[in-house]
Image (tube, rainbow, N blue to C red; front, side, top):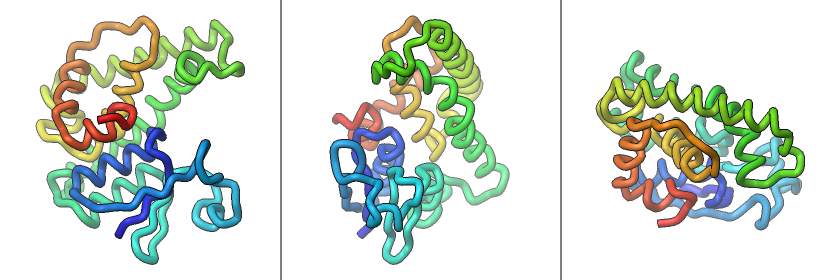
Length: 207
C-alpha cells in the first residue's frame, strides 16, 4: 500500500491526499512535520534531504516534491482524463500546475504568513499591501482563464491541475483581507466543492 509521510493540515500534503481520492487509491498516512514526528531526523532526511513533507513510498520507490508526486500518481494509477497522455493536452495541465507552484504561491506567501499565521516576521504594512495586491492580480488571471473555459482551469473537464489550483483558491477565500470580486473563481470553487475528494481534503482537511 502507498505510504504518505506528512500531515493532513499541510497544503502540499493535501494535494497528494486529494489526488489519491480522485484515483480511488488506498494509502496509509504517517504523520510527520510540525506537531508530529520531526523531519530533521536522520531517518527522515534519508528520504528527503530537504526535511519537508510530503514524501511518498510506493513499494521500494521514494519520491518527494508534491507536484511531482501527484503527477507520478496520476500517470501510474490514473487515466488520461485526469492527466492526459497527449503531449499538448498534458503540457496545458502542467502549465497551470507550475504556475500555481511559482507565480501564484509566491504572490500569497507574505500575506498568508501575516494574516493567517500571524508571523512576527511578516507584519510590515507595505510588504503586506504589495503581497495582497500581487495575489489579487494573479487571481484575476485565474478568473479570466476560468471564464474562458467555463469550467476548469485547463479546459471543460476536471484535471490534475485543478487540485493544486483548487487548494490555492481555498487559501484565497479563507485569508481575511478585502478581495476583488471574481465570479468565475467563485463558480469554480462551488464545482470543486461537489467532489468527494475536495470535501475530504480540499477545505483545510475537514469534510
